[in-house]
Figure (cartoon, rainbow, N blue to C red):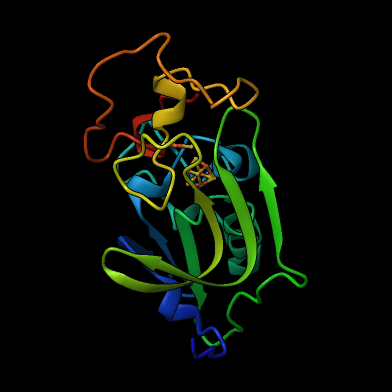
Length: 177
Ligand code: SF4
Ligand code: FES
C-alpha cells in the first residue's frame, strides 16, 4: 500500500533550482510544455529569452512568485518558501484532459515513474503515447499534431524532427506552442 506523507516544499524541488532570500524555485525542463502561464503571470521574473531565464530578484514578494508557480499546470515549476508553508495539494484532486494534449492533475499525487515513486501536487501525463518522458507529457503531442478527438487519437500529421527536444528548449527556449 502506498504511504502518503504531508508534502514538504523541498520534496517537490526538481531540476535546476534558483533562489532568492525568500524563495527557491526549481525548473524541470522535460516537464515543461510551453503553456507560458509563468511568463504571462510574472514577465519580469520568467524571461525565456534571457539567461538565467528565472530572475527572482525582479519580484520583491516571494508569495507572489509562489502564486504564479502554482499556475504551472505541468509541475515543471515548483517552489519552497524559505520559512513559509509548502504548497498545499488541491482538494479534491482534479483530472483535466487538455484538448489535443495531456491529462493534467492537481492534488495529493504519488506517481509511479521509471525512477520510482514521485510525490506531486501538479502534473501533466502523456495521453498521445509519444512522450520521451512517460508517464509525463513532454510536449511531443504538439510536434506530432496529435488530436484527442480522433478515434484512437491518431498521431502522424505534421511530423517534424524526431520528437526529441534539446535540453533546455522548454520555457527557456521560448518556443511557445
Ligand atoms: S514552466 Fe513551462 S509548463 Fe510551467 S507555466 Fe512555465 S511555460 Fe508553462
Ligand atoms: S500528451 Fe504531451 S507528449 Fe503525449
